[in-house]
Length: 182
Image (cartoon, rainbow, N blue to C red; front, side, top):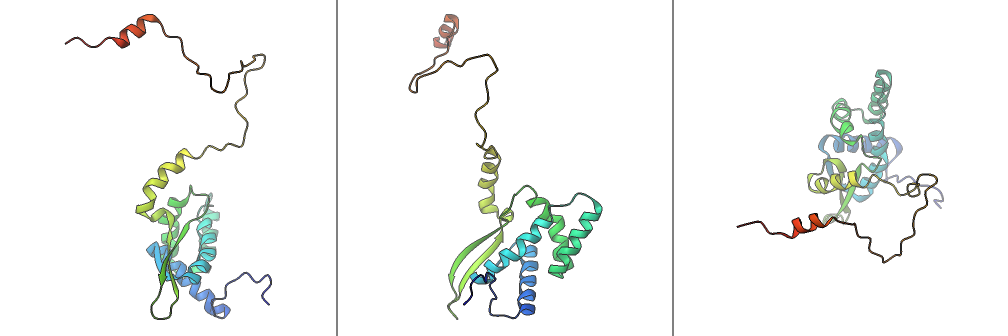
């Protein structure tokens, strides 16, 4: 039984699995999207997202170098680490998580394996344009109560269906109803 065994071994020994995930992570950082099997994509997501998070925690020179060393220990690829910290890191800095997206592509004809494309979310131009506009407007949370009134004032109750109209001076209404002279 495999109770509590949450890691997907991908049919490989530990050293082979770590080498495979390291190579896939370097490729997704370099190329921004790759096509692989669904099982490898899901395993890669859990491997690469903590590495992407490490690029955001950069405050001082010592922390920057320490994070570089940690990421290099996982990737073993200088070009991928450089790309990660110079291009990918600044672009994902404002994102709170969920840096990758997995899109299923159907089955592979040769061995009937499920194919999937895994990509970095912020580097997709098709989906990225609409998402960036909605993220900025949705930053407000509704956790707190409504703004409190100043102490000593009592708000007048308004019926649910009541329409509140503003008082308008008669000169303004006449000016707005006039049509321009021909």
